[in-house]
Length: 199
Figure 1 (cartoon, rainbow, N blue to C red):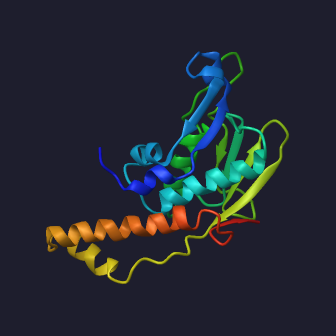
Figure 2 (cartoon, rainbow, N blue to C red):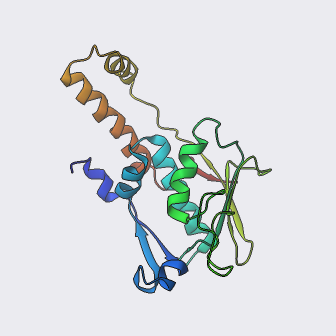
Figure 3 (cartoon, rainbow, N blue to C red):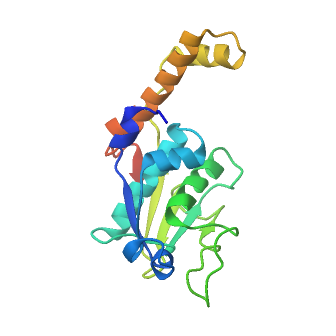
Protein backbone atom coordinates (compact mmCIF):
# COMPACT_ATOMS: atom_id res chain seq x y z
CA UNK A 1 0.00 0.00 0.00
CA UNK A 2 1.54 3.27 -1.13
CA UNK A 3 0.57 6.69 0.18
CA UNK A 4 2.16 10.14 0.63
CA UNK A 5 5.25 10.10 2.86
CA UNK A 6 3.96 12.89 5.09
CA UNK A 7 1.28 10.58 6.52
CA UNK A 8 4.04 8.94 8.58
CA UNK A 9 5.18 12.30 9.97
CA UNK A 10 1.87 13.28 11.52
CA UNK A 11 1.81 13.22 15.31
CA UNK A 12 0.06 10.13 16.67
CA UNK A 13 -2.77 10.25 19.21
CA UNK A 14 -2.35 8.03 22.27
CA UNK A 15 -5.18 7.25 24.68
CA UNK A 16 -6.06 4.82 27.45
CA UNK A 17 -9.15 2.70 26.89
CA UNK A 18 -10.45 0.91 29.99
CA UNK A 19 -12.76 -1.30 27.90
CA UNK A 20 -9.76 -2.52 25.89
CA UNK A 21 -7.91 -3.13 29.13
CA UNK A 22 -10.86 -5.01 30.67
CA UNK A 23 -11.24 -7.26 27.64
CA UNK A 24 -7.50 -7.85 27.24
CA UNK A 25 -7.41 -6.17 23.83
CA UNK A 26 -4.46 -3.83 24.36
CA UNK A 27 -1.96 -4.08 27.21
CA UNK A 28 -2.93 -1.64 29.96
CA UNK A 29 -5.60 -0.34 27.57
CA UNK A 30 -3.07 1.84 25.75
CA UNK A 31 -4.16 2.51 22.17
CA UNK A 32 -2.42 4.73 19.63
CA UNK A 33 -3.86 6.07 16.39
CA UNK A 34 -1.93 7.44 13.42
CA UNK A 35 -3.17 9.50 10.50
CA UNK A 36 -2.87 6.63 8.01
CA UNK A 37 -5.29 4.51 10.08
CA UNK A 38 -7.81 7.35 10.12
CA UNK A 39 -7.44 7.85 6.36
CA UNK A 40 -8.12 4.15 5.78
CA UNK A 41 -11.26 4.36 7.93
CA UNK A 42 -12.43 7.52 6.13
CA UNK A 43 -11.47 6.21 2.71
CA UNK A 44 -9.56 9.34 1.75
CA UNK A 45 -7.27 12.15 2.92
CA UNK A 46 -8.57 15.70 2.62
CA UNK A 47 -8.55 19.00 4.56
CA UNK A 48 -11.68 17.90 6.45
CA UNK A 49 -10.27 14.55 7.59
CA UNK A 50 -6.96 16.24 8.43
CA UNK A 51 -8.78 18.97 10.35
CA UNK A 52 -10.83 16.47 12.35
CA UNK A 53 -7.63 14.63 13.26
CA UNK A 54 -5.91 17.90 14.25
CA UNK A 55 -8.87 19.08 16.30
CA UNK A 56 -8.91 15.78 18.16
CA UNK A 57 -5.15 15.78 18.79
CA UNK A 58 -5.00 19.41 19.92
CA UNK A 59 -8.24 19.31 21.88
CA UNK A 60 -7.34 16.19 23.84
CA UNK A 61 -3.84 17.50 24.54
CA UNK A 62 -5.29 20.66 26.04
CA UNK A 63 -8.05 18.86 27.92
CA UNK A 64 -5.82 16.23 29.52
CA UNK A 65 -2.55 18.19 29.72
CA UNK A 66 0.06 15.74 31.05
CA UNK A 67 -2.14 12.64 31.39
CA UNK A 68 -3.40 10.25 28.71
CA UNK A 69 -6.90 10.97 27.39
CA UNK A 70 -9.44 8.35 28.48
CA UNK A 71 -11.09 6.84 25.44
CA UNK A 72 -14.77 6.24 26.16
CA UNK A 73 -14.76 8.96 28.82
CA UNK A 74 -14.95 11.94 26.47
CA UNK A 75 -18.19 13.60 25.45
CA UNK A 76 -18.18 15.32 22.04
CA UNK A 77 -20.68 17.99 21.01
CA UNK A 78 -21.11 19.71 17.65
CA UNK A 79 -22.74 23.07 17.02
CA UNK A 80 -24.14 21.98 13.65
CA UNK A 81 -26.58 19.21 12.69
CA UNK A 82 -24.95 15.92 11.70
CA UNK A 83 -26.07 16.30 8.07
CA UNK A 84 -24.88 19.88 7.63
CA UNK A 85 -21.76 20.41 5.52
CA UNK A 86 -18.87 18.16 6.59
CA UNK A 87 -20.06 17.68 10.18
CA UNK A 88 -20.76 14.01 9.59
CA UNK A 89 -17.28 13.37 8.19
CA UNK A 90 -15.65 15.16 11.12
CA UNK A 91 -17.81 13.33 13.65
CA UNK A 92 -16.87 9.95 12.14
CA UNK A 93 -13.15 10.70 12.53
CA UNK A 94 -13.57 11.92 16.09
CA UNK A 95 -15.79 8.97 16.96
CA UNK A 96 -13.13 6.58 15.66
CA UNK A 97 -10.52 8.14 17.94
CA UNK A 98 -12.53 8.89 21.10
CA UNK A 99 -15.10 6.07 20.97
CA UNK A 100 -17.93 8.59 21.40
CA UNK A 101 -21.10 7.99 19.35
CA UNK A 102 -24.62 9.38 19.19
CA UNK A 103 -26.55 6.09 19.35
CA UNK A 104 -24.64 3.41 17.43
CA UNK A 105 -21.80 2.74 19.87
CA UNK A 106 -21.17 0.27 22.64
CA UNK A 107 -23.97 0.06 25.23
CA UNK A 108 -21.69 -1.07 28.03
CA UNK A 109 -21.21 -3.96 30.42
CA UNK A 110 -23.16 -3.78 33.69
CA UNK A 111 -23.43 -0.02 33.29
CA UNK A 112 -19.73 0.52 32.55
CA UNK A 113 -17.97 1.48 29.30
CA UNK A 114 -21.10 3.07 27.78
CA UNK A 115 -20.31 5.00 24.59
CA UNK A 116 -23.55 5.35 22.65
CA UNK A 117 -24.61 8.53 24.44
CA UNK A 118 -21.32 10.45 24.27
CA UNK A 119 -21.87 12.43 21.07
CA UNK A 120 -24.45 15.10 20.35
CA UNK A 121 -25.28 17.63 17.64
CA UNK A 122 -26.96 21.07 17.43
CA UNK A 123 -25.41 21.95 20.78
CA UNK A 124 -25.50 25.48 22.20
CA UNK A 125 -21.73 26.04 22.25
CA UNK A 126 -19.52 28.99 21.19
CA UNK A 127 -17.22 26.94 18.97
CA UNK A 128 -17.91 24.27 16.38
CA UNK A 129 -16.85 21.34 18.58
CA UNK A 130 -16.68 20.78 22.34
CA UNK A 131 -14.75 18.01 24.09
CA UNK A 132 -15.78 17.35 27.69
CA UNK A 133 -14.12 15.05 30.23
CA UNK A 134 -16.76 12.85 31.87
CA UNK A 135 -14.72 12.52 35.07
CA UNK A 136 -14.49 16.23 35.94
CA UNK A 137 -16.67 18.08 33.38
CA UNK A 138 -13.74 20.17 32.14
CA UNK A 139 -14.17 21.07 28.49
CA UNK A 140 -12.58 22.83 25.52
CA UNK A 141 -14.37 24.58 22.65
CA UNK A 142 -12.72 24.55 19.24
CA UNK A 143 -13.09 26.04 15.77
CA UNK A 144 -11.28 24.51 12.79
CA UNK A 145 -10.18 27.07 10.21
CA UNK A 146 -8.36 25.54 7.20
CA UNK A 147 -6.71 28.77 6.10
CA UNK A 148 -4.46 27.19 3.46
CA UNK A 149 -6.14 27.84 0.09
CA UNK A 150 -6.07 25.32 -2.77
CA UNK A 151 -3.64 25.96 -5.61
CA UNK A 152 -5.27 27.96 -8.44
CA UNK A 153 -4.95 25.14 -11.00
CA UNK A 154 -6.72 22.58 -8.78
CA UNK A 155 -10.23 23.66 -9.80
CA UNK A 156 -9.60 23.12 -13.50
CA UNK A 157 -7.82 19.82 -12.90
CA UNK A 158 -10.68 18.61 -10.69
CA UNK A 159 -13.30 19.46 -13.29
CA UNK A 160 -11.35 17.73 -16.04
CA UNK A 161 -10.81 14.64 -13.88
CA UNK A 162 -14.48 14.38 -12.84
CA UNK A 163 -15.68 14.82 -16.42
CA UNK A 164 -13.26 12.20 -17.71
CA UNK A 165 -11.40 14.69 -19.90
CA UNK A 166 -8.08 14.65 -18.06
CA UNK A 167 -4.92 12.84 -19.05
CA UNK A 168 -3.24 10.45 -16.62
CA UNK A 169 -0.64 13.12 -15.99
CA UNK A 170 -3.34 15.65 -15.09
CA UNK A 171 -5.09 13.16 -12.79
CA UNK A 172 -1.85 12.50 -10.96
CA UNK A 173 -1.10 16.22 -10.75
CA UNK A 174 -4.49 16.90 -9.20
CA UNK A 175 -3.93 14.22 -6.54
CA UNK A 176 -0.47 15.58 -5.77
CA UNK A 177 -1.77 19.14 -5.38
CA UNK A 178 -4.67 17.91 -3.23
CA UNK A 179 -2.37 16.07 -0.82
CA UNK A 180 0.10 18.96 -0.86
CA UNK A 181 -2.63 21.16 0.59
CA UNK A 182 -3.41 18.51 3.22
CA UNK A 183 0.28 18.42 4.14
CA UNK A 184 0.44 22.20 4.43
CA UNK A 185 -2.48 22.11 6.86
CA UNK A 186 -1.58 19.00 8.83
CA UNK A 187 2.22 19.21 8.97
CA UNK A 188 3.28 22.77 8.23
CA UNK A 189 0.48 24.38 10.25
CA UNK A 190 -0.16 21.77 12.96
CA UNK A 191 0.72 24.27 15.69
CA UNK A 192 -0.69 27.32 13.95
CA UNK A 193 -3.19 28.91 16.41
CA UNK A 194 -5.14 30.30 13.44
CA UNK A 195 -6.01 26.80 12.20
CA UNK A 196 -7.19 25.11 15.40
CA UNK A 197 -8.70 27.91 17.48
CA UNK A 198 -9.70 27.56 21.12
CA UNK A 199 -12.62 29.81 22.05
